[in-house]
Amino acid sequence: MGIMLKKPEGTPGSAVPAICVGLFVAFGGILFGYDTGTIGGILGMKYWRNEFSTGYINTKDHYKDVTSSQSSEIVSILSAGTFFGALTAAPVADAIGRRLGLITSSAVFTLGVILQTAATQIPMFVAGRFFAGYGVGMISATIPLYQSETSPKWIRGTIVGTYQLAITIGLLLAAIVDNATKNRNDTGSYRIPIAVQFAWAIIMVTGCLFLPETPRYCIKKGNPERAAKSLSKLRRLDVEHPALLEELAEITANHEYELSLGKATYIDCFKGNLGKRLATGCLLQALQQLSGVNFIFYYGTSFFQNSGIKNPFVVSLITSCVNVGSTFPGLYLVEKWGRRNLLLFGAIGMAVCQFIVAITGTVAGIDNLAAQKALIAFVCIYIFFFACSWGPVAWVVTGEIFPLKVRAKSLSMTTASNWLLNWAIAYATPYLVNNDPGDANLGAKVFFIWGGCCFICILFVWGMIYETKGLSLEQVDELYAKVNRAWRSPGFVPSISFQDVQDVHIDARKMSLTDIENEAVRKRSVTHNEGQQPLGTAEKY
Image 1: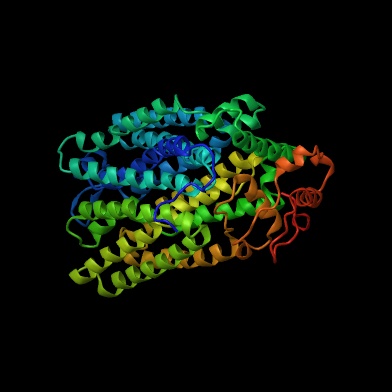
Image 2 (image 1 turned 60 degrees about the vertical axis):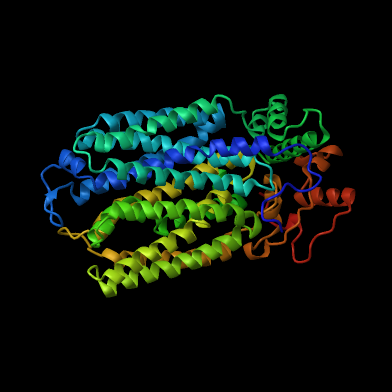
């Protein structure tokens, strides 16, 4: 295997346009990462604490501050907004398109930034956080959808994974800007970090004006001519090129077969094989949050401060740098190791690190300098394992396991589950780790919770995550229909082409999946791999 990912030999056209489009769309992750990352530093700024305090004095440094409940509200309201935004993303993306959906999301996000920048009291600041979160939620569900529907199958995992890379870059930029303005003794200390987000939104909207709509959305809307033009731009092939016509025919035939089984509603997303995939996506996104990563980026500055570390802003900057750098190996390994192996690797590493941090912080205490250094070191190692595995791969898997007719709906619900747990963690954390009356005062013991969740991640990946590396989105449907156990999925070889079915004028509405497979096998003389069940014996998707 080469060091770099290479286009398979004999593949016509160029992947460069699709890669460039996918990388630009990933820029939306900066909005996501920056907005979630900047609040941690703002909560630690003395000017902001004095400006927004309602009279509470922090017992740690005897300075004005917001209470645990206020801090919880300010941080978690963003996640509440993102939850509803993610659910809104599906009807918007299906109604006006993936591209216009991204523009709409950015407009809502901008409204939130305006309110936060103008705020001088908590209520208006919280309202701004909600609307910014609503826009981020819409963006976070639409970007993987757009990337999955435009990327070549051999590099789809890497392209979708760049969304997580952009999130980490956003977190790093937030840490840099927060660190640069933290000592200002005016409103610029918090308004500058917030207002920088206008630049991200302007870049996103301007670029989206020139992007093509996804071919699969055009087919879904019954516009094959527009789909052909879009695919022509993405593959750099003439609209009459045989390879382009073949890919378009496969997308069309697969969509027509899905429609022959009836139009999909939200209820259908929970039924049978689709319900299994939805459960996989929702649990994957929920466990990504329960791994504890956002505890570090939401409350890292405050936690390190309360743990006796003298310069918590610098530590947060270091963790953000580790987060960015560690995402790059994941973009390579997701196509080399595959989804299952990389998620297993990450879950094991994260669990070990979380338990070490918990034990070190609990046994040695916060006054031990060596313990502080060990705590920081293993937090960084934990971030490495997360950033190269669960960070990008969760978005990759959820972006590719759903069929076209329910893809937007299902992806919005999996993303909403991510934000629901994000909200729960953001809301509960101050009560778990702080030492105010009524708080649990867990301190470093909270890492025992995250470590336990990481152990559950290991079992989940083994039992629920199918290996989809190298498969087209249409072939993933066949995988789920034919292979009934996730651990049997590695090595799967697709044997059905819905284009073959269409070419011989088979009426999918009158045939079972077994009949379709038999016709494809007869026409192409393809045999099944040992251990894979016939397509017709699995539940129809």
